[in-house]
Structure formats: structure tokens, C-alpha cells
Image (cartoon, rainbow, N blue to C red):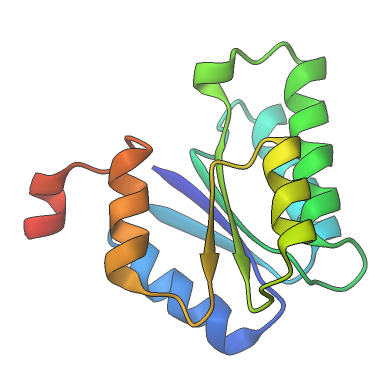
Length: 137
């Protein structure tokens, strides 16, 4: 599985990388602009991301705008819904309007910080990205 982690906070970025690297190859970026660039490069290389973790509040381009840009790119390239990247928004905010906007733009889930790995594992299982067996290893 290919994973993109877009997170401006170094501690959160390293934490997500350490946790998610057991499930696949992780790339890390520090803002929404880099996330969009990384996504476009992956599409060009025909090696799309299976999972993208986007922090809602990031410099340059926030996570919600990056999410919209990624979904727009997928629509332009006629990527079937079942082949689209699964996107999980991460947030320290409990501001419902940002999370609601993210769901409107097509994110699959959101995780509040600090990230609860058990809950994140459950979400990954529900999205079909990992199986329970793999989690038990």
C-alpha cells in the first residue's frame, strides 16, 4: 500500500509514519501544496496513493483545499470511485465546519489528535486497506 502523510507538525508526522509504515510505503510532506504535488507526481508515475492522511490546518494550502484539489484531479482523470485514494483527515480542531466540508469534498474519515492507533486501525480495516489478520501479526 502507498501512503501519503501531509502533516506540518513534525511529532504528528513521525508518529503517523512510524505507525503506518507497518502497512506500506509512506511518503511525508509538510503542507497541502506539497501534498497536491506528491499526488500529481504519483498519478504521472501511475503509482497512485492508496491512503492519504491530511492535516486540516497546514501552511500554504490547508488540508480541506488539498482534499478538494486531489478529488478534482481524480475526476479530471476519470478515476473510478473505487480506485480513488482513501483520505483520512487529521485534526487537533473539533471545529465541525472543517470536518463537514472535508466530508462534502469526499474524505472517508477523520481522526482527532492525539491519534488513537486502535481507532485508526479500525478505520483502516473498515476502508478495506488492511485486514484484521495483518493487524494481529
